[in-house]
Image (cartoon, rainbow, N blue to C red):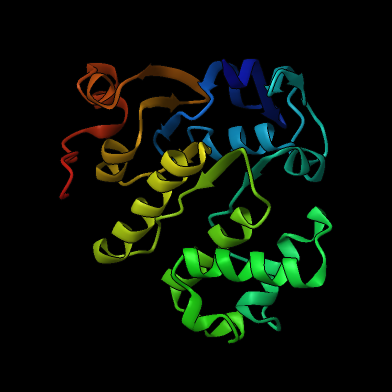
Length: 244
C-alpha cells in the first residue's frame, strides 16, 4: 500500500515552471531517495508534499487521504514530518527543550514528555549535549538536533532535506545507521533529498530523479545510476560507490 501518493503535481512561480506533472508513490516502510541537479525542483516538491506550498495542479495523498494544500502543522500532526536543510533551532533553549517543544502536540504529561524527549535526544547521540543551549552545537550536532525534533513527533513518514549536508564522512555514518534503524525497528517511511550519492546507494530502496521539474527516472539505485539520461543530466563522472 502506498502511504504517500503524488499525482500530476505542477507548480510555477511567476511563470517559471518549478514542477511539471510529477507522479510517484512511496510504499509504507520504503526508503525513497530523491536526486537531481540544483534547481531541479527537489525542495519545491518537498514543500508541496509537506503543505508549505499549494500546487497549481495535481494531488498529494497521505495514508489514503487527500492532503493537497493542507496546513503543514495539520500534515505533521497526521504523521508526515519534514526536516530543513537550514537548521533553525531555538537558540535560547537547550537541546532537550527544543526536542520537548517538538513533541508538545502529543499532549503528554510533563514527566512522560521529558522521558520521551530524553529518549529521542539519546537516540540521535546528543545525550551529552541535552542541557546545553543549541547555539553551542557544531554543525553535526545541529543536524542531529533537526532530526531529533522531527523524531520527537513520532512520524510515520519523514521528509529529510539534505540531512547529511555539511557533515564529514565520519559524521555521516552514525546518521545513516540511525535512519536505517528507523525503518527496520519502527517502520518509518523515509523520503530524502541528497547529493551524496554514496549515501543514496547505501540507504535507498528506490531513487527518483528530478530534472527541470520533471521526473526523469525512477528505479533501484543501480538502475538509476546506470541510466544514460541520469548520467548525462546529473551524475557525470561522480563516483557512486559506498566509500565515496
